[in-house]
Image 1 (cartoon, rainbow, N blue to C red):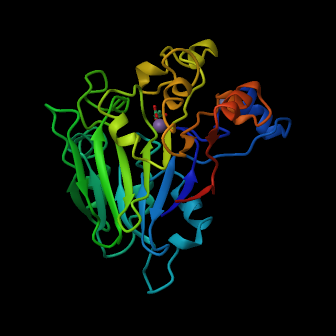
Image 2: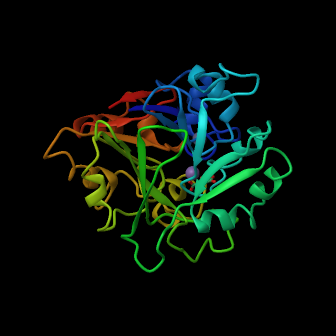
Image 3: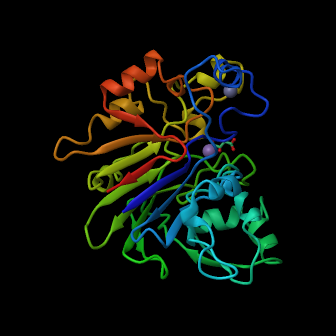
Length: 313
Ligand code: MLT
Ligand code: MN
Ligand code: ZN
């Protein structure tokens, strides 16, 4: 199974257009050891030809230009992208759909009912796409009464991959009618399995808490890619950038009790597992490759995703 990181940054990317934080300023000036990152997206394939895109970042056109496997090669209108899974309806994960509006063939979009509702109400993007290429919506079934309910599906033109989705704790987007009233399916995590080899990758770029129903799925994974947004719970508060904590906007920070480092330490005792942080906010000190925080991650064998990173399982 091929996993290609198209964008490893969180909302705003790195550097963020209006941000003068130490990281963004330092990257622009070339005074820190770090590389730029576009907004959060990966694509996955078993045969290296037919890909599923996870999320459609506002940076999707640049991301496609930098990854030839997604570019046309077979017909006058063509793409390696055979299906799109949206793990939530956030702005760093959806506006790229506007950029994928050309063509006569409908976009095959897999998302939960909650995400579909947000993308046809608070944000009308799927309705608007109906005036261009059109959309085939496939519902990822989440049982609202049973969060442990996992939903498995395959995507017809993406051979040899199976996807198992489960609801998890994060947050609906700020524009969502239920931003402060979480529903199962606002955000999902997905276990991606290559059927012929049994290799698996867990992907959850928005993850506020590892609830008890997640380890049984995450434990199966050969690679765990999780929310790497913030280092501390009060990162945005401390910098005066936002009045909310990381956890309250759906992101478990890396450091501290119950943080992602402590959680990730629980995995990988039975078999070797790659642990990768993705969706890194531009304020996060782990972006500086020589930072003390990055050294702590190294000690815990936790990797930091970067644009263009390839993981082959
Ligand atoms: C998030 O992950 O919390 C959102 O993408 C934030 C945003 O839209 O800027
Ligand atoms: Mn985000
Ligand atoms: Zn910044």
